[in-house]
Image (cartoon, rainbow over all chains, first blue to last red; front, side, top):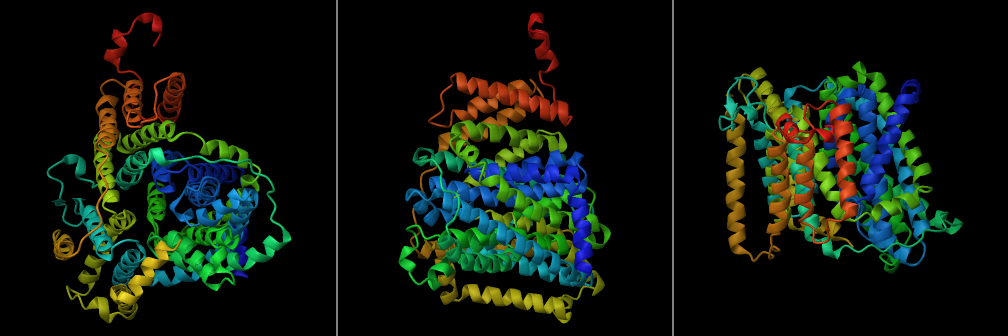
Length: 500
Length: 124
């Protein structure tokens, strides 16, 4: 079997001393930032991106990936122990997890979350190994028109999956596309939206934008709520689930994994929607739905499995098509470009050791997390109790130095401050930032594909609908748009986000 | 398909949906937006701007100190006591070692003109 030869290649790559070290460092750091509320993987990876320049490509990507899925583990710890989601994806875990903790079952809730995440991580890693190669092969036959339509579909999907107003999400996507246009046009060399500032000739850096909108903007929002943060910690005992617990969590974990794997591939808030959806599903099929919210172990197992599965499968479009499904994947693409690797379907054929090494390392990382997390729980508890007013000045320092070191100019730092302000206003107005970031990264790619497609067809835009694959994708996009505009669907979409 | 082709399409769409959004907002009563935390906004954004101003003029140590103290003032719980001082010194040491020594980011720890002003016995 080909797949086993490939996985073996991955094992050989991932089992070096150095990859193992960076995998460990990544998952440890990821758990730490996942545990700390108000510091997410997007901002952290953006801060660390300049640091990875000096590492070999495989190690850099393995570490960054570890931060991402490590954060999914860590977020649940905070959700269970202090009823505050460490990550947005853990918001529903807090409902039953915290209820369990109040009943003195914190240990079992934590173990359930870790086991659920591990099983989901293992299964979805296998999914990537099986489905990524054929998908990449298919993508190799894609022309410019197909790529353009695929990105349109992706952006529409991210609008549908965003919470809040459909119109607002659409506006954020369009704004993101425009921000991506900023800088020198590659084809003509003409400056666009630069206001004659030489610093803007290369456009806005993605890291600058992400740190501003996510990192700095988030800090101000957190400061507003500072007085409402209360830390309720109890000693954690009884880590092992009982036989009855096992019987109850197997089904939710498997269903959560399936739902999370599917939603994770889709662009937008895949992992977030996955955890909300999995919770709603378990509540619906449960024999005793009244237990949910009062410490039902199923309500911890399902969303945790779903968000980890979603986090893993969101690598699939990034690795096979070079198209990010969420802002973290966009940063991974940035990391690849820094390393001189052209993201896209050719990664699999040209960099097989990197590709398979990354996949196998994800499974190793999940295993490390399972082994690490439970014994280290005391350490994480201590980390949660660090007051926020010690944390955020340090985050600001790392962000500022990180942004400065990208091009060694202060201009980027001013820009990050500006985007911090804008990010705060966005949050105040309930505008979700993720679709904007996604559009920002896809904008230049979309423009290039559209131009190339129109060049080949000699300016005839019907090429987008006469090529079958492209037409199918545009059709799907139109279908999604139609669905979201239908009142019935829109209502259930809002309920899915509000559940709990 | 000139440089303005794609941006024009996007801008038109944005204007179109923007107008719809304005109309919709006139027709329905929205929820009230909670008050802006102007003080926190000014301190946090201001501290980052101050960092950018200082990093090439006075060096990293002064820039970090100003950034931390200014931004920390935005928190109602922050007090400048020994714990905060130790944290600040540790943070400066960490950043100097990792970013300047380790990663070779070209920043002065203390700008040359400032160094000349400091007494020699400090040994910097």
